[in-house]
Length: 291
Image 1 (tube, rainbow, N blue to C red):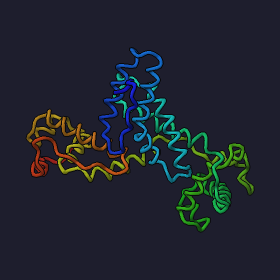
Image 2 (image 1 turned 90 degrees about the horizontal axis):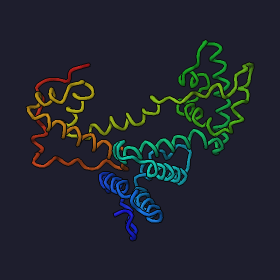
Image 3 (image 1 turned 30 degrees about the vertical axis):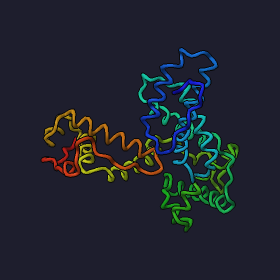
Image 4 (image 1 turned 90 degrees about the vertical axis):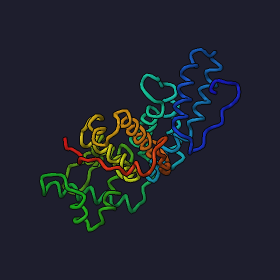
C-alpha cells in the first residue's frame, strides 16, 4: 500500500485507528528495503494518510488563543517527526504519534506565542491582577487564590483566569517589567512552572465523561481493575467468565476510550461477536474493592 508508485488516498475522519497502525507497520517493514526515491514517496504517503489523525488532535486545542490553521500546521510537523522516528518495538504508531504531536503543540504554546494579540481590556486587567497579586501576597504572606483576586478586584473569577492565561501573550522582555505599586516583584515572578498533573486535567475530565457512555459491564470491569486494583482473575471470578474474556473486554473498552479521546465525536459502541445487550447487564456479585 505504501511505497507504491500510486498515491494513497488519505483516510476520512471516521477511519479506525487500526488502519493507521497497520499502515505504519507496513511502512516500517518496507522502508529499509526501498531505494531512496521510493522511501521519500512512502514517507509522504504515510504522512498524508495520517493527516486527519493529526487534525483531530489539533482541534482539541482550538479556542485557546491560537488560530486553528496554525495548530494544524504544528500538528503536521509533529506528525512528520513521529513518522521519521517511529519504531514498532515501542508500541502502536497512533499512541506514539499522539504523544509526539501533542508535545509539539504544547511546545508551540509555551515557546512561540509570546506575541499573540491580547485585547486592551484584558491587558489592563492583567496589570490589575499583577498589582493585586503583589498586594495580597504581602498581606497574606502567601500567593492569593483566584477567588481572593476576584474579591479584591470585584471581577468574576472567569475573567481573572482569562487574564492569568493571557499573560502569556506578552513579549518575553515584558516578564522583566515591574508589577507596579510598592512591590519590587516582576511579572516573571507570577508565571508558574509547567505542571504535568495540571496538564492532564483536561484528559481526565474527558475520560470521566466518556466512561459513562460505556456499557455497564465494561464500566464496572474498568473500575474494578484500575480503581479497585483487582486482578483479571479476580474480576473473572466475580463475573463468572474466563480471564481471557476479561482481557478482551478490557482491551476493547480501552481501545474505544482511546478512539473517543481522539475523535471529534465518540464512535458508537459495538458488542463483541456473540454478545447480547442482556449479557452486558449481568451484575458482579461483589463491590469494587479499594486499594
